[in-house]
Length: 310
Image (cartoon, rainbow, N blue to C red):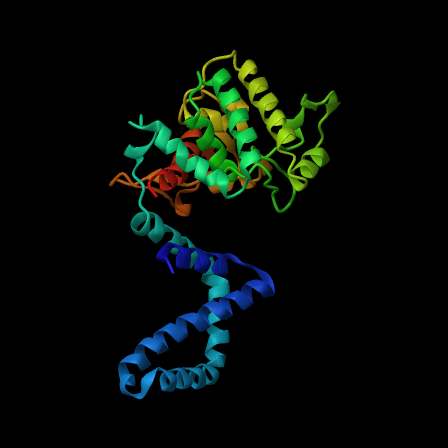
């Protein structure tokens, strides 16, 4: 099992709430104790064989049940700081990304684009992928002089290039996560498109409808921005996330105010920074209830850099 997967599973367990969260914390404690005991017993009882060691571990865990409950209870109260620390370790050491790697001109951009195509293969069949690629290229021809990569990167951050993704709360759906506000003025075959229409299109895998709506939305925003060429991933992503912030400077506040729903529904963007060593991390202690273009830039490009470096 990869170290980053272990870290992700631990973070999910620590951040879960309610009785389900407590159950996951009990499992996490059991696993941790089992690993520690296995290492100790493996060292101490190597001559007795693995079976004997596992039996001893099982009896020991049963006798330690009360400590499992106590430790899981402690994690319930301090799980978030531990999860934050694990995330920081992952970003600093397991998968460091340097800001200097962002927005560079790749010598072989076709090869980089192929990595995003591989990502599409996880969510689409051959026909769906063809429709999707043709639709994205048509958008890129209009807004970015035909350069496809920035658009792919924006969509990858938003949905990992899954055109049928629906948020768990069903607030947003589709390749670029349409909301009711984002569907304003969008039509398909002469009829106004609503959120239930997009949800249905995702459920039935209607790729033509999703891509046509995506094209209309992107071109509408591009026209509102004066048909200015959009070359950078951050500006294309802002076309999806906050069109009013497109082409704004790095310190522009996209959303701010801890009691502002637009802020706290997107507070995962708050706290992104570059360390003195040039590594891009999210430090929750640096949150200031203000999401800037710079922070979004760091978050979006970090995720894309991880994909490209695979």
